[in-house]
Image (cartoon, rainbow, N blue to C red; front, top):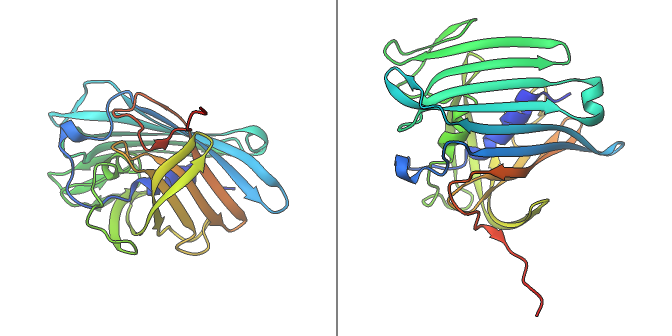
Length: 268
């Protein structure tokens, strides 16, 4: 059974697709009170389409500070639905506090409840000591670190204009007391259709962690809106037991118009 952490991991990899200089605060592709919702479902040979879960990303309007710095407080939530919820109940919540200017993470909270499996963790990123300190471990970090949630927003601020089709680049992020590297391949631009309509999108192929869910490193394709919001809208991935898809199904308080959406022509 795929976990919400894996669902969020899939969606967050869709955001790891930008490479270049970070935007200024005025140019950030998101703002406080933005909300995004994703519907996740299996497509298996014997079962057909099975709706499995929902995942949400929200930025609270808080005015909080960490180490004297103004921070965003973002929350990622995931839960199982339908038949999957009956057999394998998932209620997960992840929280991140990250700098409003350079977007590096200061604090990360994990609350996982998946079919009786419960894990709670709290991580502090201490840049003076160069340490990430969790309940279980303490590891070395650099001058700037992204966690599972802050990375979703950090990656949306970067520019891929200099990356050719077929080009690739590495990206690092912190997860479960380790620093991971994913190599991302840029596949070009396409028109993609989802439940919300047709969009002009950028297509990517990220490297994932093999093991529990994925049996080879490049099972996935993903599409991100080709506009100033840079929102993941569709993910298609082969997994050990079939395939899984995640689609954007709701959004609220976007900073910019969603002008990558192709409007239907009105009949004369």
